[in-house]
Length: 172
Image (cartoon, rainbow, N blue to C red; front, side, top):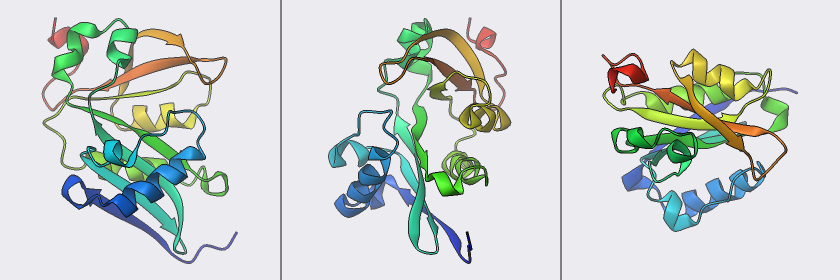
């Protein structure tokens, strides 16, 4: 693999066009582990990040409004209203995995969100690179894992608390 140009495009909510949302959705389809959202749903995201290698789309991620049942599924329903955003809709093309693309996308999505509580969900298995990315960025696993509808494994919730709040106990 020869790589000469790697660029990231950060698209704020007000700039998410139908075309950008459609391209994002088509790439997310390749992940195969989420219900692919509509263009309208993607346009409600706080922001999207798209990564291009030599002008070909190779990675995506989003900061979504918290409309997920994940906190309830994990037994953390009492925190539902304290989390504004969910980090999600990540996918990196296989050829480019292990190069830090997901971490860079996540950093760009979280860049101006130090005053927000944010959660993410991911599969719980040894050496899951997304778990490592989340932990590297200050997320911690909380709650009860639940059975995935997409595979034989389980899903877990990872929480990142706003600056000044260190753990779930700070809310209790």
